[in-house]
Structures are given as C-alpha cells and as structure tokens.
Amino acid sequence: MSKQKMLRVGLTGSIGMGKSTTADMFRAEGIAVLDSDQLVHELYRGPAALEIERVFPGVVVDGAVDRQRLAARVLNDPSALKRLENIVHPMVWAARDALVEERRRKGDRIVVFDIPLLFETGAEKDFDAIVVATAVEDVQKTRVLARKGMTAEKFASILSKQTPDSEKRARADFVVHTDKGLDAAREEVRNILKALKAHLET
Image: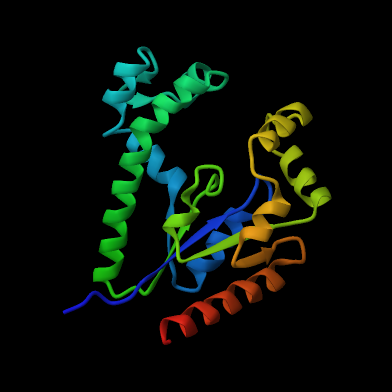
C-alpha cells in the first residue's frame, strides 16, 4: 500500500515580516505547523547539549545550551558557525522527519514548516511549496525597532545576513502580505490552502 501524498510547505520571511503571525493563521485553519526554532530549543535542552559542549566548552549551563554564550562563540567566526550547523542541522532534520511521519499517521495531507532561514540554508529544495510572509519596508522597520533591546545597527546586521525580501518573494510559490491587516492576510492564507488542497486532488 503506497503512502498517502503529503505536501511539505516551507514558510519563511525576513525579520519583522509577520512570519510567526502567518504560522498562527495556518494553525487556526487546522494545519500542523512545525516550528524550527522550537525544535532547536528542544535540542539545546537535550540531545544536542552534550555534543555542543564537547565542541564549544563552557556554553552549557544546567544541562542546556546557553544561547547567548553560544552566540558569542560563533557570531563572527564562520568556521565555528559551520561546526555548530554540522551538529544541529542533522538533528533538526531527523526531528522534522519524525514529526512528519507522526502527522502522516494522523491523516494530515499538508504540513507547514516555519523556517526563518529557509533560503539562506538552501532548504527550499526539501519542500513542495514555499510561502513567504512580507510587508513594506517601513512597516518591517517599525515592527523590529519596537522590539526590546533592538537597535538600528543590530537590525541592519541581521538584515545583512538574510536573503533580501524581494528575492524571497521572487522565489516563493505564494506570498502573504502582513501589512494590509489581519483579515486580508487570513484570506491569503485560506486561498493558499485552497490551492494546495486542489493540487492534492490532481
């Protein structure tokens, strides 16, 4: 008996573009959303902690990776960041695969993966469709600078490491505009789901 077809959808968006809000809208429509950041948090509290401590001594506190200590070790060191990715990424992929199989057993036909750095890590090839959350630049800037501890310099540094929004939109299968009000964004999400469900029936 062949496995039922399931669509893996990648959801991404630059900082301040409303990706998390969009993810919640998919959840509200009954779609399972797998949060990559949450997966990493769980790995840092368990399976990945020992290996990361072995490679970066002193970053684990009370059995869990201290993200600030780890960031200080890898932020401006590309080779250190690569070593960290080589530890964490395979664990994330394995955890994702396990969650997909769990959702498949429950009968889900669409699973959304919330991945902040989807294009930056070359992960788009792993998905059947890509959704990008976007907003105009002024709205993005206002949202981000309102965050606690955020500065214009920090914002600029984060943006410099992210694929430009215009490129993300060009490479997306679907775009959700989060600067036109929640109702409009919700309608876009519903239209995306209609298109995905129609594709499943072909």
